[in-house]
Image (cartoon, rainbow, N blue to C red; front, side):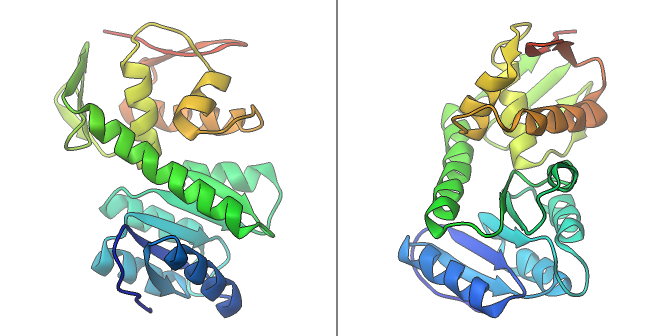
Length: 228
């Protein structure tokens, strides 16, 4: 693990190819971030625990254990935004990554400009939700914005950062049907509709954690949060 002590947010870059890892670190440091490096699965989990990064750039293919397992272990301890890097183009692999708690993904090869743009979008999303403050109550669902905590029927559930943002977005408009394309634009920050499967994957995760009855599907349109 390496450190660069600079101001701004802290990012953990997990990549086993030294040249790629250093290129990413150099670009992110130029953007004003503090950057830590890890090169295998076990080291990544340890680094996430000790440095508590604001965001993780995480390669899927790693020695020790892969990035999917890293994501599972990190998210189980403390929710943190994860930008996953993959050399695979199979949509199934992307959906698995999103299913274990990744917020976004890039397929290699990618441009550093695009990577930095995605990093800034993920961090702004967290800040935007925090700026609203207060508590949202919808039926037996309670969301504490400041503490980023969620309860349903007094049982607390841990969500990933993107799951939390998506739930908040739906909860601010209970019963309103929000199209997938709008959710992609307003929650993910994506300008096109190519990632609608990402929305479906995160809705599935929210239903698994909070109950299948909480979010209603409007086929061919989108989703609505139901007040109970």
